[in-house]
Image (cartoon, rainbow, N blue to C red):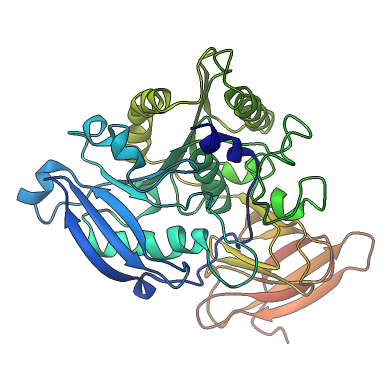
Amino acid sequence: MKKLLLVVLVVLVLGAGGSTSARAADLTLLSSTQIDARLTELTFRSPSLADPVKVRVLVPREAASHPTARYPALYLLHGSGGTAAAWTQLDAEALTEGMGLVVVMPDGGDEGWYTNWPGLEPPRWEDFHVDELIPWIEAHKPVIAARSKRAVAGFSMGGFGAMSYAARHPDRFAAAASFSGALDLGTPAGSAPGLVDAQPWGPWSGPQIAWRGHNPYDLAGNLRGVGLQIYTGDGDGTDDVEPIVGAQSKSFAGRLGTLGIPRVFVDYGRGGHQGELFKRDLKQTLPGLMDRLTHPVDLPSRWSFRATEREWTMRGYTLSARRDALSWRALEDVRASGLTVRTDGPVTVTTSRRYAHDARYRVVVRPRGAKTRRLVVRASANGRLVFDVPRTSTVEITRAAASTG
């Protein structure tokens, strides 16, 4: 169990926020084993993973007699050293009995860290979970295919995964919960390097941008509109993991508070990094998760998002940088009349489908410390605008007169 949680501090990897490179159709179902009336174990082959992977799925008991009924979905992620069976071993089936909830429990690798490892080769856990598995589940299981009916939670490494996935894909998840997760890899300072050999981004003491691009603390501002719950303890006097992840959870919760983002934060004090407490955390969290799934909250109409990848898509907007290097790039205060772009160099912005097709718009780009650019841009047939921004800029968008240009 100690391995399960020492690893919790260190490993994260590349993958673009909003990436849609993989599809449900890419998954091949190799086998389906009915374990009991509610529980099925699926085995898939995925182009994102080198080996077959297992996923356990719990469906409501009443689903068998109501074949047209659809339910919200909760994705439960395990800790390092765990498997797809981890949450059923922690009584997830009994805890979710009668809740009208589909529970999806995927394998995340022994130390997979819910991320795409460097390069284009497997493992690409983020692609598998977010871009392949979720669409497959929504096409083949009795779930409601909507962000407002989708939540993610996990313990330890899975707590990190839940918050990292939610922060990198706030348009995919209505709620997220972490139980003793590694939520701020910089706290306490210097604790990450040397804990494990598997460091796909290199040591924490080296360039940190790839780490930061997945670190929940650094991505906290992306979580506006997501229902958040964080549970942690401070150890039991002999546990050398819970005090560390406890400090990280407190740091992350504090960051959310500073940003004015609502969250439930429970520091239960004395308690080690162990399955019985994770099971208790899930039991206490489920009512809040179900409330969020039953009474959905929309994402803010004016929104901001940042990521480190060269190209990413969020809520229909795509930002594509000229430079390949990882760097923080953001869209802020996005609305129909404009936005702010924060970037280290030239980028191309493609908007969502919110403008009148084939109409012309005035796009005024005001770069910081440079001359204002005034453009006339015609919306595409599907209502998107495409324009270049040379550096950090504010952008104003207004409908142009019919006679313009």
